Amino acid sequence: MSTILSLDLATDEGNRLLARVDDADVLIGRAPAPKGVAIQSMAVSATHGKFIRFNEHWFYRDLQSTNGSWFSSRMLSPSAFHVVKDGDVLILANTPIQSRLNFDVSAEQVQLLQEPAIFIFWQDRLKVTLPLPRHGQFYNIGGEDSIVEFPANFLSTHKLTIKADGRNCLLESYQVGTGLYHNSTQISPSAQVMMHDRDNIITGQLVIVFSTGHKTVEAEANLGEVGTFIDPSARYSKKLITNSGFGKLLEEEHEHREIVRTQGIARPIAIVEPDQHNLIGDKIIYIIGILALLITLALLFWFLLA
Image 1 (cartoon, one colour):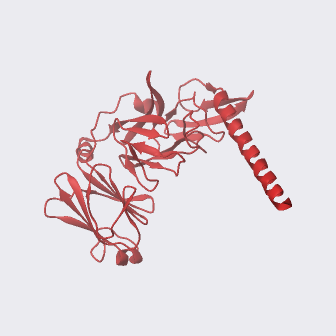
Image 2 (spheres, rainbow, N blue to C red):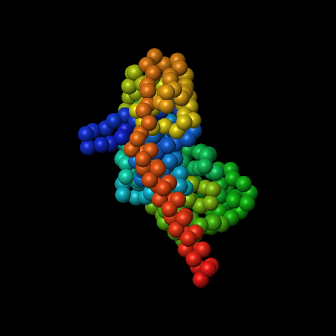
Image 3 (spheres, rainbow, N blue to C red):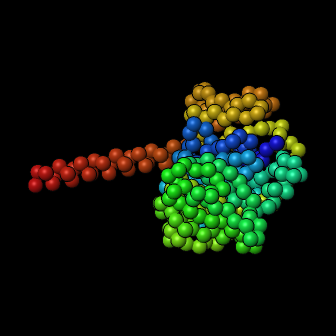
């Protein structure tokens, strides 16, 4: 059982399927390497971000991109984990990407997915998923009575408490050994923060994410027949290798064209012509960089002679 993520490129003419992912993670960007989903925009970084699946949940992280990743007019912090939900529109620089989720899970798991949840990450890995505490109950994060195990130096320097406020999450901070951030805004070490859907609390290696739950839909019957799919018309890096339950995509060189060949999937070979527009843009940027370097050297030489 798994949660299948579909990524659509949102355009004025409608949405176009870029990728359908059943792997644990996938990179996305202008030229992601060694594997990933390609977006043909010079404003998008080569490796812009990453979609990651932990259990039945998908998350998105910005990977220090130049022009940022945005959701609901809010720029996502590179340290944050954005909970991906069905119908989300993420803006990668200037390119809108819409997500679609199909939950191939049991009825019990569907019920859990629809409930509010707290995700606790440590050193970029999901450590535990907790339900929103019931009224009058709370979770201690850090300190001697921490509900989650952490290294001793963290436990001695951090103390946070998570409570419920209706279907929202209330976080109270009593002690932090490093800076404390609510999404991308630094807050007081002794702050009280109301966390809404998809909010992040970040301090050092600890990231706490709140989600009000998923709107679940049934998995399409034919999704399991294709496994991982990445649009072959996109421009990939030359090291593309994408694993799936039905084989893997291998890239070869043939007559100056990139060929994405499928193994184990009954689909014809897809021939990818190099994107001339992006190639010209890359050359222009390269030439501008060389000219800027020459001008700088000339000015330095003139300054030394003067």
